[in-house]
Amino acid sequence: MRIVHYEYDAPWVGKMRCPNLKCGKETSAWQSSGMSDSCPHFFCDTCSNVIHREQDHTLLYENEPSEKLLQEIAATLPSCPCGGRFAPGANPKCPNCRTEYAHQWDAVKRLTVPFMPILDGSCLIRDRLYSYEVCIGSRSKYWWRLLVNSLTRASRPTFGG
Image 1: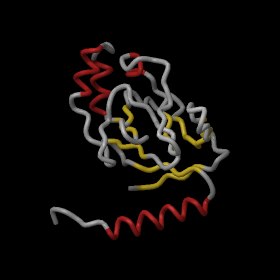
Image 2: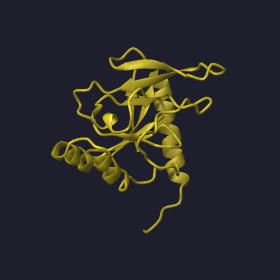
Image 3: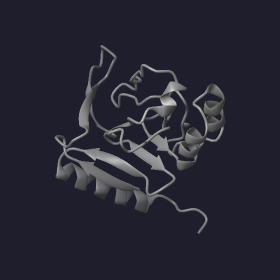
Image 4: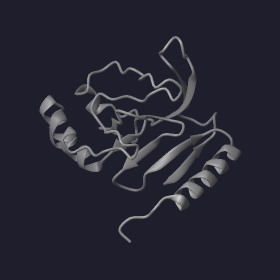
């Protein structure tokens, strides 16, 4: 999977503080500007990966946001590469303690929310263009992740070939 690098001071990069008072760790996150039309999107129920599919986008613009539409989309959401599932109402999680960052709106209203925070180290899974992992920080951190990814990919078994 590709890795997209953002510097700490890049536009749309900020910090999210863990809502768990015993943790409170700050994590870097990139957030879509809202102009990218990244709705609907769904987070994994286990990790902080997020999925955005054009087929869901098309359904949303052909129909009014509703519980029925949400359930129709939810029935087709795939499993996440981590083994979890992309699900309505799921949110990013603190990488330190796994506490979910709460969202103020219900899952139906969130169908039209274009702002999509992606935590450092999390992946955006898409059915158009390419999917990628977000790396926020120094260039050396980025090169280290590229190296680790290539070594990990080389050691994974391949199937069907």
